Image (cartoon, rainbow, N blue to C red):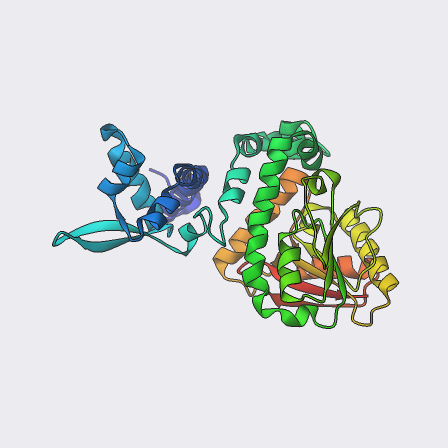
Length: 359
């Protein structure tokens, strides 16, 4: 049999492995959704110790003919780092059991750091089915996947769908909880500031974290009407304001843009940043700045898997809402064109960076 382009059989088989791995990759997300829906992370957590398969089967009331399927699922997820297979001693017997890992602990509902809502939101069929429209998105001008599948831009869809809007806000709030951990050692970012505006701050999780750490810092959450209308109440140093970041931003010493700019194209980002600059200049603070928490693609310095995630997120944002993740050069170009004089990038989480931009 002739080989493809003179390639060795071993190369061809490696190519097949790569192809098959990606062909089956969509199932990984469905497995993730499944264990969240079944509540398996919570079951193990509440069990207080690693759980055996028979005990898990009993709690879930799995039919006998599905036990082997559940075992296959658990072993696969253990292989991929969501569970750890350990040996426990039960009635003087050694038994195989499943323990939580750092990843599955993030799926325990009710915990301080829980990302289950973002899994449930992003893998909702209403949103995830959009990916079947990739060919149409590629071939037709000025369309987004959400525009094709939902009939409107994501933000317009959320305005009209209270159920999905609630799910989306809960997803963003769960991600914001991670900021408590990320910002723990970032006091230097907020020192010397008296006021800050959290643009698109959702239900205010990040703002509350900042306010608790800096009681003298006054924080404003700028959001869309249907977010603020959810009976959100402020406190002494936190308030919610309805507004449009494309029109104006309340004046403050600093403006926070967490996971905002990657939602928009360069022209829109320039407009947002120009409004941020105007808000800072109006406050007349010598230490005024914009604080961006977002992805910075750096293929030369990041580990392969980190770059893989960032590039995947880049495609995700481009297809769904015409957004993008950016390299440092792309960020710098935006900042200069918006009239800023300098910037500084610092690592924040495994895939997010903190960028301080100075007017």
